[in-house]
Amino acid sequence: MSKLKSVSRSGTVAWSTSAERPGLLATGTVAGAIDDSFESTAQLEIFNLELSSPSTDMPLLGSVTTSERFQRLAWGTGVDAASYPLGVLAGGMVDGSIKIFNASKIVEGKEAEALVATVSKHHGPVRGLEFNWNQPNLLASGASDADMYIIDVSQPATPTFYTAGQRTSGPGGADISCVAWNRKVHHILASTSHSGQTVVWDLKLKRPVISFNDPNNKTQRNSVVCWNPEVATQVLVASEDDMYPLLQMWDLRNAFAPVAELRGHTKGILAASWCPFDNGLLLSAGKDNRTLCWDPLAGQVLCELPASANWNFDVQWSPRLPAVLSTGSFDGQVAVYSLTDCAPQGDGWSGHPGAEPAPGMRRAPKWLQRPCGAAFGFGGQLITFEPAPPHPAGGAPPRPAVRTFQVTTGCDTVARATQLASALESGDINSLCKAKAEAATSAADQSVWGLLAVLSSADARQELIEFLRPVEGEAEAEAE
Image (cartoon, rainbow, N blue to C red):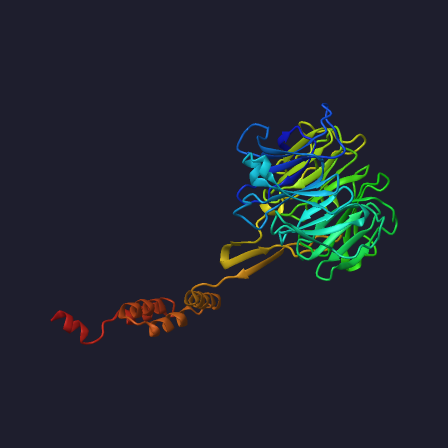
């Protein structure tokens, strides 16, 4: 993969969801890291990707100083386009609060007006934070002691909130590490915790509908949960446990064991992101300083990002720009990469010691593939292809549907051609010509077909003389 842009920040990242400004990128100073200056304050900053510029730097559009550092950052479109044209930014802070910012005010440089609300409901760091993909006014949050809230930001200045349901762990429950909204069913929410348990919530019923954990390792520390963007029942769970650095694919139709496990990291996994444009692309970043791009449906590593000097704790696909992704690492770099150039070797590549080089991309991503097509061949042949149907994880990918058709145009022409072919095959040209002569609508056509009938007859010489002999009375009439 080629690096497009980078900025020297140790920050968690959120991409703009605005269709008008998809190239905006927000960073919030991450908790648990400190720079050389030992600065204790935190910054929320918005950068412009500017892909048209040859520079690798991203210009800073605006920033806001905060008293606490960020555990998680989320960017939603909001519902009030007039007052919030760039949407709203939500920060999960280390002190348990959730701060709501007006992104357009940050870009305009109005720092005093940028912070519009603070929600103080959690009692520990907010590690899970995500806006609903289908209802952008809903924000889910998760923190310590299994605390989860759904925040309605229809009025960002006065947000309302309610619980997802009764806590399954009770007081002293495990810390929630990640939350994720289902891409297909808007009222389904998943959460995972450091106890290894993953819970799926139905917000209509306000209760958990299913919970599961790895039967072979019930105490693993889960760090990530994310849904398959195309299959509503498939969810991925990642473990930050160095003893079990796995990405597990679960199908809720049978939640007794994972249907597939992706093994490639040698230490725990800190972040993962499923591509919203192609469910056959998945990113993962681990404590082994590796960031891998997977085909989760086939269980293969497609390519690998250049290795960093420290952990990549954040990795995300852009929700608006296909093939564009970002990483955030503890070595103080936020980088933006493009999937369009993903050769296995190149500048900056240094694989993990003892690991084999990652292969290049084996297939084109879905946004470059034609969903269907057709082509004509000789003899009226038409061939078409259609996309392959979805298939469950772990199974062999089905082949696209390819069909051939015989296209018939000009039925009268086809009928005459068929009649001529039959006559040529049987050798009875004379009967065909006689039939054409009898069916002719003009004297000229009748004469032509009659002559052809004579020439194709068995006694062509004698019949030609008879055909050319003038009829009695016609010669005298012409002479007179």
